[in-house]
Image (cartoon, rainbow, N blue to C red; front, side):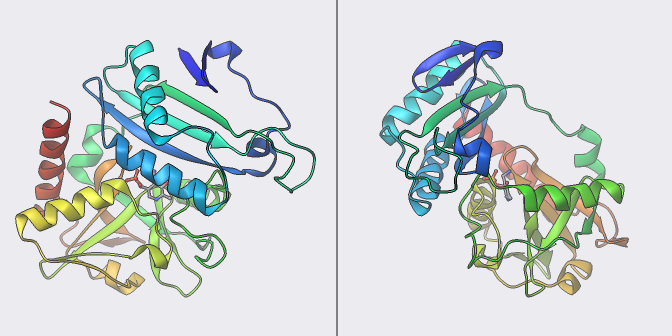
Length: 286
Ligand code: PMP
């Protein structure tokens, strides 16, 4: 595996950054997770746009233009001859001093890793998964905007640990007001009386790229869709529920906090979205 760091490729064992990098010391940085399907990168421009927006919001000046960044990602995929896989693109604040102040960090580090994707077993897509509500709340949007895909995932990690302790793969997180925000690494949707509903980003959700694809599919199929406030009651009484994310794609959720969703099986509209997403990938990455 060849890993890109600041314009150069290194073997995996040689790919190293400073222990004084504020990405390590404080989680000061931003990142993206991107899929490679059939040698082609899926929604690359959208991911690069989000990366640059995240960086701008935290006053992190990425030391290359977006077009150059796209090229570096493409190059990393080609050099590793990846057919299907997962790209982790990271920009850290860079090497600095032992203090929070980012001022001594002169140059952000750009790291690109093109690896294999850990897929969920196919049976989960056929049967759906059970999730719980985590006690750990999402960091309020007025403290750290959830649209910033930062290297600070401790909040999500604690909720993920709760899910694992409860014997589940994922947990849904509420915001500080008790509204549903998202899962630990995925957005959440429900279908209620034929309408597709999902929390707006200001409830504490990342503006997911798979989320946007699902909304696009709903529009092309004429399925009504709304960004809205959702409570746990809405999840418990939904007809269907699914999660979306770059890694999981579209995963049916068939049980929430011990309550079966609908009839406890992936619903017909969820299956339409799974098929619609498959077609979108095939159209983009033939
Ligand atoms: N929410 C969080 C917290 C995430 O980390 C992710 C990405 N894994 C998502 C939602 C899904 O976003 P995307 O569809 O852009 O991968």
